[in-house]
Length: 271
Image (cartoon, rainbow, N blue to C red):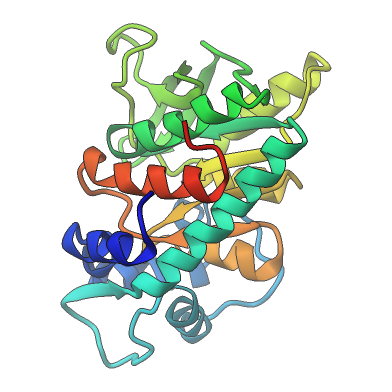
């Protein structure tokens, strides 16, 4: 069993919390864009409240532990490890509850190179507990606007976790996927399930547009978010995202393994 103290030490050593690789400049830029309702950072969320840059900075200071000082404009951003631990505990609670009722779960990531293994381990544990890990719309095309224009991607699942990949990328089942913030993949997946009158998820677990896109549609959603992802924390504040865990979402994949063990243990799903 991984103790809270040991995990806190790991979070700091791996720079998942504490001073992180995400810069203050990146975070402040995201807050400016969110305040302007730029879809690149709203991630499928349609905020109900009026969020200015100052409001977002105060929210992120409360949710993540970043500096609330607007004059602090450079250097690495900071995440409070205590807030990360609290978020992981809350995430484990939602996982435990859906496992207890053998609910349906949809996993999806816009960071497949970093976070796929974290979500896949949760998917494996929930499947073993009798949950239905959903894989709707596998192989479906998704047109996503990028800085290079509209690109077509294919929706795929690896170990029960959805991701998108460019046509012609390595074959189905490989872990190679595209980095995306778009909510369109989760909309396509949920739309396909609804259109075929298949079971809809009781819980969506993921990041970026997977969480915000599902939450905006009224599906309970939980996930991970960096300091430059204010949309998930706004969604949590407005009640459309159940849990947003603050951490650096782009460190080495193996650095998330202790988090997996911690969450599964807290969810009473250790294997």
